[in-house]
Amino acid sequence: AVSVKSQLQQIARPMYSNPPVHGALVVSIILNDPELKSLWLKEVKGMADRIIGMRKALRENLEGLGSPLSWDHITNQIGMFCYSGMTPEQVVRLTNEYHIYMTRNGRISMAGVTTGNVAYLANAIHEVTKTK
Image (cartoon, rainbow, N blue to C red; front, top):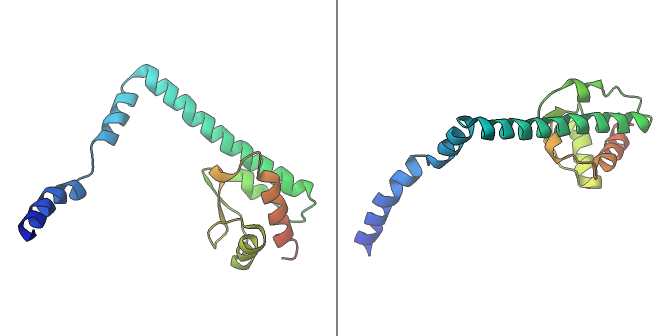
């Protein structure tokens, strides 16, 4: 049994030490085929545009709630994450009172914001930041 275990470990070791090539092959196929690359770029743009739209919706919802704070930074930032400017204490309140999760420094994953939850998120942020 010890001998078999040793042999299996020798077989398995290279699998863990060397990353698989199939991911790189998929990328190579897509980027080297003009039609697939065009489709991929269109999908990436669609995802980026959705995130931009959610940033705009979050800001508009917060402003619509009458927040005295400036939320310009939400739409001025780019990328999948938004640094909200909330304190760690406010983030804890979001988690405990509204079951909204983000990093303690207030970084929100904009990919998780949807048309179905943006109003709830904005209301929760408004509630925890209005006594800042």
